[in-house]
Length: 584
Image (cartoon, rainbow, N blue to C red; front, side):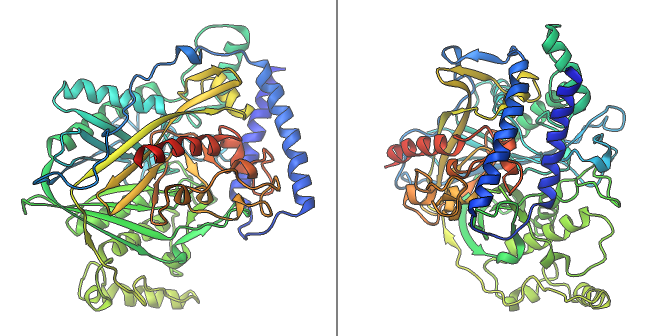
């Protein structure tokens, strides 16, 4: 019986990854037969997974909701400012650090992001291509409402419990030196960095061991992530946060936003969802002290998932920061610190056609490298004319362009110049006031696969027993940089339709044939320019609209298998409704 359980879980994981790779890309309405097929398959999968879930007892990470405490949660700056305080100045500090441990060749670490048959379902780290980093900023606005921190980790995702461990480590190191309003941690969702969730660390061995321990009552289950690595991560990230606080300096901030075109983004794997956010948002903090480097804070929405995929030519077992690393390297060469926050990326991937340019790219990571470099050049050139770009050697190297053009022609392709038909955008001064509010929400866990993962201790979650079943406490938020940039902060990988509106919210184009019961985020806040900081303060898997949720795996619904359940989006929307009331 136990062997059968392990086989079922293994097969479901394998099928999920396969559909991730081969799902079709074109948008199409849901036909009657597709809805019937989706529903039938969802029923089978839910029944099988529900049976597996029923076999396993609850672990030590399951508690009554009444016993849950809010330790480690920060609610924000309090009352919102509508204008700068008298003589207000921005203060910002920056730090980064490597998250590749010195003993990566001696200790067994695992890549988080893919478990594929091509790698015989093992992904032990066998090399380091570039780096896995944490990048962090500390910011305040002279109002005395506390320091707010944003950190982004190059990783597949990190749970709220682990983020609270980072917050605790920072509090101990800061020893009361700073009053913190918010401590936010995002992930880049890089599919080629050391596993920080636990779903990829020696998975099948761990599932077998924990299954036997759970079913036979043999004591504590093996932790999902590598305990040694997570201690290293808590220490390194919290120290980078403290370093950012210690280097805060006064300066000015400017904001720009540009549509960089659909050629750099690919909306795939979910036919029902139509929204595609192709904008890049940029904040530049310039210190008053000219000897200190400026910091550029960037937001786009695209999966960093290229280097970790195993293929015939690519092992997928090497640590790589994906395009974010090469974006950072490009900004560094131009004299900027790089801070990156990913957006709403469920089904949104980097489109490599425009940046590959028919080049000879022997290794898959080279595709991420080219994408990151071109995105970096776009970020630097937002306010520049093409004539100004062509005078900048970093942005426009004629020798390199000539060589790559010839190579593309040799390969029978066409070279795509990133700045062709380039139009600059305006850059505006950001008034020096900063607002942030965060809220805890309790998302029902209706997905039996996630319940099984919780019972087997595969990820560091506390599962709450509520009146109507299991729940997970997660965090949502809203942030304002003056009156220039406003963003929602959401956990997990969010379907862009939930944020910006789209066809999957409608009656005609969703699986259920019903409309989503809530307005999209931009409608709720009454602001079409609102952006999203995704994968922030928790890794809760995919967030898809309730009306288009189906546990079928096939028919472009593989996202649901790695989701808390049917009510993730609506629960968050209810939380955002209360945030809107607070802001107004």
